[in-house]
Length: 342
View 1 (cartoon, rainbow, N blue to C red):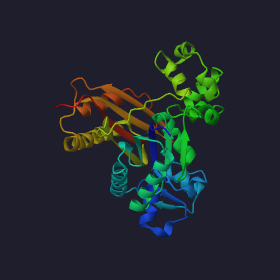
View 2 (view 1 turned 60 degrees about the vertical axis):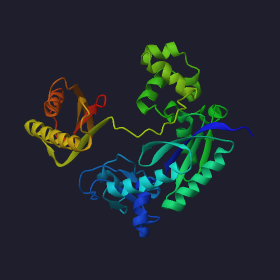
View 3 (view 1 turned 90 degrees about the vertical axis):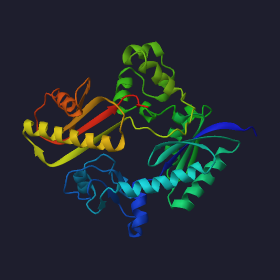
View 4 (view 1 turned 120 degrees about the vertical axis):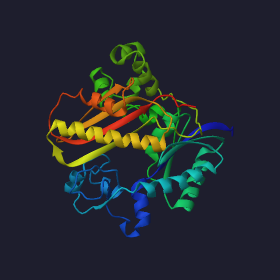
């Protein structure tokens, strides 16, 4: 059998919930929801939910209060970033010890690049090594590129292995909706459907020029490329460099006064400045984005280029672009970096 280059995508199963179960074994088999400070009576969103909770429709990003109404008997826990970072570091250490090139995507997932004649065998040995070292289960997708590997993982969950290549791409995905592809969301899928493109096979067969007219000269042809299963093959072990840093705050009582909104945005911006001084000294901020979530759950964002302003001034300038004056439940400020200063 010929040795080939493969891309593997390793994704830890229900990672945050799994870490909490390891710390509290009595939670095994129960519906666990992690988010905010763990109090579903307060505002906050679900960071993750165990498979038992997901079976009842509880999903990441859902308001905690809604999750509690849907599943009142669930166990609600606060987010513990330190515990998840420590567990993630252990997993990534195991992956690097495999000899593959490892590109970390986040706490719970990574791409691996390697050459082997038996990618399934390598994947299963990797799963066993992660489980032995951390007691965490993972799923592994195998592909000829990152797109294929990332999508394949979903077919392998939980704790399985799945190979998706150009050979079985249309067999597996051809009749599925375009938003089954990594990189295509529901909004784009609806627009494609309005153009008569309702499947991955249909997207792959579309005229790039036709989609360029609808989505733009870059995005349109790129969507066709996605439909054909073509993607990046390069896996890099270069350290992850954050593209930005931000803070968000959910208020337990809606803010009705826009003057108070301005004061809170300025305060959050100051906290971001403090964070950057401690964690990203020397990196220039080129753009500031402000997020406003109105009652009940409508979110808008606006950003401005810094252009000589302080971060706080830029945040307030971005806030001035909001025309709504409805009660506000969440505010966020994010600084986006330019090139790193050497």
